[in-house]
Length: 589
View 1: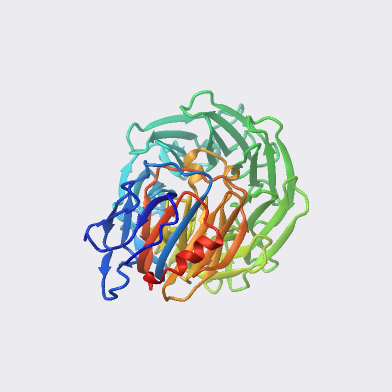
View 2: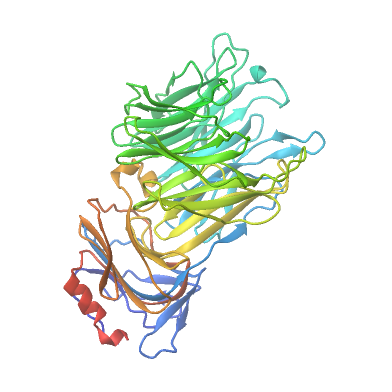
């Protein structure tokens, strides 16, 4: 089987010749060979040998070291098949009860932090929380955990960010044995922590802010983001009058130079924050602090100066958690609001970067109480994850069945499509960071609970595939609906680099195909991102972006169900003539 070599721009070339059961050889001359994990050779077609992937198998290629990419790239893939459908795995047994983790996808590993919910079966209340951290492969294997805290304090609701060789954490702890004590007699602390990426050298620093005149300190869950040489935090703390107020803080990466500022006097509840290239944006509510529930969007400079509220949105919030995403031109929101009959309804909304021009859309229907949704932008779409409870179970003390849902819309909110992704007569909750999309593959964590306080189990799931990808830097993916996705910078790798998402906006181009053999080409020239299918231009997108490098392995076939017969990675864009020559190579059948 002969192949057309256009020039010396080839970085990796996999001809799938079946010469080894355990290795996929690189014909480029740079030695970028891959290790086969579970995929098997398919040789029934004498003119086209291929590897068959079953949705769990993959090929792993060590990070490239022979050549560096420029700001151009093209990928050629010959394949037939589809991305795998969503499959859930129980990662914990329920003993001890464990919440769904806050997590981050980092190349072919997932790092996470969570806490137990050990409860008193007689008094039916939580009585012990402790922090668990760990990691696993992106296929769900090699689940490895470490217990980090031993109460008191009873540590809970950790956040994390993996930045190169370090992991940074934020959580809070309850300094009391009797959890039924009034809030004003609680002694809570905010904690920051860090470790090496392998879990070693765990170090915790307590961050206490005593309020003059207060009988205790009461802190709740916050948010954090590492950018550059600083860690930015936001969290609520109760003041001397028993009202929750918003605080922000920042420190150096080693935890030194901690500077905390109280930002509100009229109420501030559980916040979110996002750092951009020139500012920090915050969203928080006044839930539980004032008869009129409101949410606020605020902004400060990167050093914390010039704090100002840019939008005040008055809503009857049904839940205290509000989520947002700061885009290039607008800020996108998700929140829950009660309707006149008391049903919780989810809204998505957007405002200008200066806080003006609010546009809100009610989502869902009257058949379930709906939470606010986590948001991720992928190209010209938003993806959402949330949970919804049935409204027909109203007995006192009854546990309502709750299901996890996902949705997708265009950036302007149109084209909304939602689907339920769990099923059963128990509670399935999507909390904290519920999902992350990397190219064509989506990773989920959820919590399955037989009751509110007992037998909570961590669920992990994934859907879709990446035919080939190097983290979120570049690749060709395919969803379970056989939508092919050529992408650059589509995923969470900016967190790993310690950069704002605005440093590398995600770009992708999409097109649906059938399950026969196709030649897919993704080409990026620094300005245009194109997807070609069988020699025809299928999609094009303006993408004036920088192709960002990472130290992750090249993955082939992760989540794919079908055959792959050829992959070529080049460090330049291909033009129409190049692509037609590749497609017309009759030796590929």
